[in-house]
Image (tube, rainbow, N blue to C red; front, side):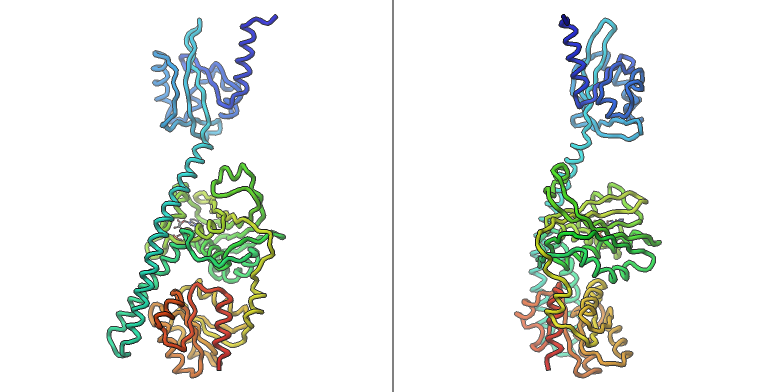
Length: 510
Ligand SMILES: Nc1ncnc2c1ncn2[C@@H]1O[C@H](COP(=O)(O)OP(=O)(O)O)[C@@H](O)[C@H]1O
Ligand SMILES: [Mg+2]
């Protein structure tokens, strides 16, 4: 028959072997006399390595001296107490890595003296979740604030610039006040561009969602991306076959990829490699639990990685906040990643980042997939809109919008000349021997305004058609009758289709 002592010893052994906490016993001198399986796993040492070693081995080096003193004090007055609550305690593994822990202490008295027993819980996962939750709450709060401000400002800016235009229209051409008003309009346009990015961040951007074939969008953007990143950066696409489409606004998706590519280029001033990879992933419950923004199910993931300078953890913690930038004044707006974040979250997805200083960065964009055939492809679009063959000139100071517009028009068959401003447009027009059928120009640009460019070109090339683009909603400007009747106008951001149809209409009108 087993004695009661033997039974309880077996029970203790079973408990020691099965608990997930690490249990370590030490004597007064700190020598480890007892370890369980979890202790070996948690710290990466074998039982033999641990037994006989000093308990301080398992602490970060900076903590060891203080711990010795605390240990002596504890053994002078041993008591049972939970530790680590509200304190940042850390353990140190054999490989030198540290991890956050919670420790409770107990003791037993025996004929050989007092032994301390430490119960150690690895709280890395809990800490990580806490941080994610805090981060999500912070982004939510910033998003609400930014979205609220942007929404109200957008309305006010519309009024400011609408009335400005009306005044401008009533002023005689010789009035000195015109210059002031044009400056005001330019400032209002810049402000509107900031508010629209803030709206994107706060997921209040107006979406024109379609069922989108992501690979298609990326392949079509390839040429523009190559030009954007320059010759020193190699672009590598690796697009998986047979991906299900996602529901997103194709223009926003393209803009997000452009923003990531521009950042990658900025992070590789001496050149490098930009890789865009698409893949299908099924997220399981475990993944979803550790990524609160995502629910389990089928996703499409776009990974955008660069071989650039990378980021430290402190930078990564802030990159999605609007206006966070590490770039010098005038170089960065800090709105690129904020709009990427808003765009992806608006589709029900999420963005994750992995990066290390000196080791490049990868942005993982998760989008929930849908089981429908992709709706909008540029082929179908050109069929609906009618192809073109004429030469058109695109004048736009924003490089991304200019490239995008030119690319769409080339796809439709147009010959496209591009200029980044009015002076350049006039120079190119003067140097171009053939016909230019239409001018597609931004209304408000630094330097010469779109309207002046149009007047100049009409003077030089009577019969040239003009299509104006502006960051302002067409309705409002039309309501205020700001542009005189007979002027063709398209509000930014426009859909590919709108541009194609509108331009065709303008060109075909007698
Ligand atoms: N690919 C990248 N490599 C290194 N740092 C990056 C990368 N992308 C973004 N960052 C960091 O995130 C910050 C915010 O990016 P973003 O929102 O696009 O604003 P901006 O580019 O105007 O600074 C950047 O200033 C930079 O510090
Ligand atoms: Mg940027």
